[in-house]
Image (cartoon, rainbow, N blue to C red; front, side, top):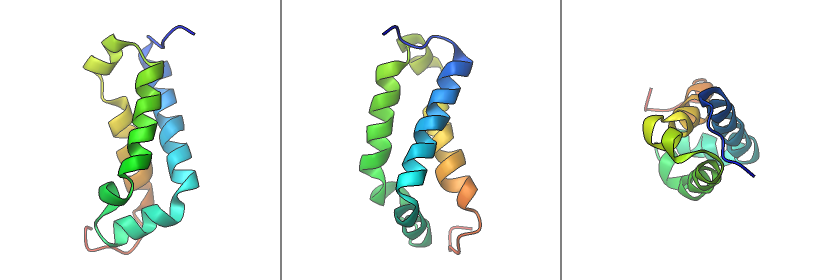
Length: 88
């Protein structure tokens, strides 16, 4: 299968992967936000998603964009703004 080389397609893939990570780890994400340890408790899941994203996207886009990292922040962090936490 050819790698994704269009920015919009790569952005959509990143958001889809981040959405799946969020969907299947909701409770873990909430605890991570509450304890200010989100990126520690979710390290394996985030890395697994990153590995999938890197396997599907062209090297040119990987070196010139940060779509996956942005999707992780948007979907795992920003969307959980209602969770009680000392970090906000």
